[in-house]
Structure formats: structure tokens, C-alpha cells
Length: 567
Image 1 (spheres, rainbow, N blue to C red):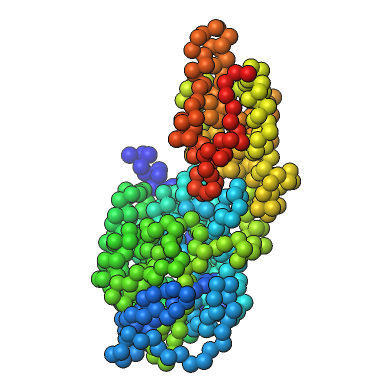
Image 2 (image 1 turned 90 degrees about the vertical axis):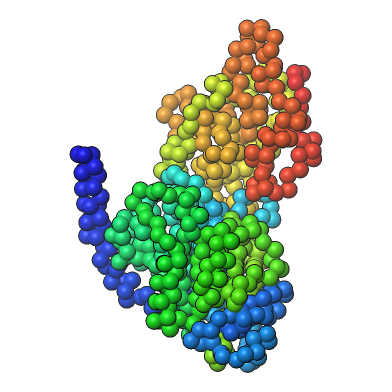
């Protein structure tokens, strides 16, 4: 009883303190800017033509997409909806993927970044990253295209301190790129309401236009709804076109994260109905739903609410075919932007009289087409600085002892018996894995690091040192520790002993093996023995997975590192 009272009192005092610190001012800011033309700040790219009386169909080669879309206040009442509208002459803007007539407005559509602020630098030619996304935005805004950017949510992948810092960094990146709204996905909600509140406060302090959007999730009993946390919908004028956007979390998705303290979920159908009514009142011409839902549920929303021109859906194909036509339900486009930030779905909107048409293109963010953007490189440097300054290796990274209860001893100790195996290892990239995280060492691929040291990032360290869990990014108690974080000489020694990806990452920690050898036990070798079949099936892929090592092929890689038993 007393504990419950004290928690409630603390929460109330906290909210009062927030209000005193500027929420009221932010509410005034929201009210004064919510209908302001935002086309100066936005990013995007696109391809596909469709009248609003006729929605999008095919999207091959940037050809007009035929079909029908429901009437809006700007829609034509013409019956012939199979033919794309005849557009008046427009200046043609040169883009990397094709030539487009200049659109009235452009929507850049993304989602489910899943923590991939940038592609892993371990392999070349990986697609994606906020830096390339910003490069795309810059190309479009430099061409004079009025762009607005929307993200469905799912920016995070994990929980914990590093995930919170990365979420803040990602939101800062979206703000710089000109995003107007990001939906609340289950990944954001898993971080917890308090962490989301902290992130929201930082956004408010920056006077950003970026909003968390969700019409059917209420946080803190609605205490901050007046300040737009989260906002139910937005309406903005982009290129003279009034665009309305709302967002929902489906019933199926809410089951994955609820019940959740200080958060309440409600029926998405009722929430969408209310948003549509508001769009009617404000004379919205283009309607977009950010649907954090399965693609099946998103299709149902499109069927129940045919006035939506676009439904941006989660849980679609991870790597969609860039040349495939978007699915169409009635007159509504179902856009799947892919995952992990590799693609941007671009919708070009063309207004001719009272008629709207569209071009759509799913743009893959390839390195050769989209150079790095300095503002995003600067953000990554700040992110890495925070990981070091806040010692996230210690905050998030320390786990229990290894399941075997054995301790890590280092490759040098292993080499006292296995001398030939040690010599082979010393001449492999595995031995220099930690060095490769610091561009100052100029290892192969250092240019992909953009001059930024990743040696204090748990998500990088886990595969570049010894004694970490590469899937959970956590350090076993006797595993590698940066000497900068060591509190005694024994901990400092872990940096020297366990740098690089050594024997024990595959064979397991060696202390018990050494004890068995010293005791003359006949089964000592079995305790650390790993067959080639075991390595191929389950060991190498923990680091050489599809994200970090997309060209990995076991047999050819094994030839470079193979070693057998005793000398």
C-alpha cells in the first residue's frame, strides 16, 4: 500500500516537474506549427503514376501505375479510371535511377530499421544506412522537390542503455532528414515508457517537428497527449497538397508487447474512424496510414477504409524486389518498405487540376549511388562517443560466467601446446579483428568506418574480441574488456589476452581444459574439440551471418583458417 502510494506520488511529481520544465511551451509550439507548410525540410524519392480517382498498379521502370483510388476533395469524378491522366509539361529532374517529371509532392516511406543505423562495415557493398538515406533526401530537395518523410516505427531492435542511445540518435537523424512522423512500433514500446519519455523530452528540447504517431496507444493515462506524446494524426501542406497521416498498432502486434506498464492499447478501427473524420473536417486530399501490423491486417484496414490512398505496412518482405509493383487493394496502395533501412519507398504525387496521380519506386540505398552525408557521419561519431563516455560495455555488456563455468585464457596460452595452430591463427584476419574496428590501424575496409573508431561499441566488439556472446552482445565475466574501463591490473590484462577473435570463441573457454591436461585426464581433448561439421552448422554463422558477412561461404573461408589438433 505504502509502496503503491509512493510510486504514484513519484510519477505525479515527475509529470509536474516535466510541465514546469517546458511542456507547456512545447504545447504552444505544437499548436502554432501543426498546420504549417513543411515542404522545405523534407526528404524522399520515388517512382509510379496513378490518378487519385485511379490508384497505383505497376511500377516497372518508373512507368505510370494504373488503377483507381477513391475520391478525395481533390479527386476527379471521371469514370475512365484505367488511363493515367495527361500531365502538362513539367521540368524533368535527373536522378540516379531514372528521369522523373517534377512531382507536386513526394513521400519517402520507410520502416522497421531494427537498429541498423548504418550497414555493418565488415563487408563491402552492403545496402542501407541513414547516411545514404539523407543523401537521397538531399538529391531530391536540391532538385526542388517538395518532400515529406514518414516512418512506420520499429527503429530499435534491443532493449537496454545502448538501444536507448541508438533510438535517440536515429530520431535525431530522421529529424535532420526532414521526417514529420514516426509510428510507435512494438520495438519502441519494449524500451519502456520511461525511456520513451526521456527520448521525447530530448526531442522537445530540440524544437523538432518530428512526432511519435499512434492513434490507439495511450501513454501515462494520456497525461501528455496535449503535448503530442504520442500524437494521433498530423495534417501538413506539402507542395500545395494537404496530406493527412495517422498510425495504429494492430491487435496482433499489441499482444507481443502488452500488458505494458503506463501504456494502454485500444481498438485500431475506432481510432482510424476518428482520424478519418478529422481528415474530412480538415479537407485532406491525400490520406496515409502507418500500419504497424501484419500485411494481412494492413490489407483489412485498406478494405474497411478505402479512402486511404496509401497504407504503409510493417512485417512485409524483408528485402522486397525493387522492380515489383506495389500491391493494390481497391484504390489503396499497400507499400512494403523492407527492413533494416536498406530501401526507401518513394511515392511521387502529381496534381493536375482536381486529379491526382502517382509514381512509385522502391529505391535500394547502394553505396555507389548515394555517398555518405556529413551530418549523419557526425551523428555516428557522437553516438560512438556516448558509448565510450557512458561505458556501455559495462552497463549493458556484462553477463554471467560462461555456461561451461570455465574461464577464458587467451590464444597465447593455447599456443603453448598448439604452436602450429597459433601460427596459422596469427596470420588470419581473426587475429586482427579488434584492430579493424579502429580506422587508424588502416586494416582492409577501414575506409568504410568513415574515420570513426568502433572499439567501444558492444554490437561491434561481440564479434571482434574473445569471450563475448555474439548474438546478445554481452560479455562473459572473464571475457575481453577494454583497458580504458579496467579497474585493476587483472582486468587490464584481459584487453591484451583476448583481443581479436581467438581459439576460444569456437572451442570454448580453456581453463578447465588446461586443468584436465595438467591432471593427465584422457578426455581432456574432447572438452574443447570442435568438428568441421559443427563449425559449419552453428559456430561461424554467429558472426558471419547475412547482415555482417553476406558473401560468407564456409568451405572457401575454412581454407583460410583451417587447423587441426596438436602439432
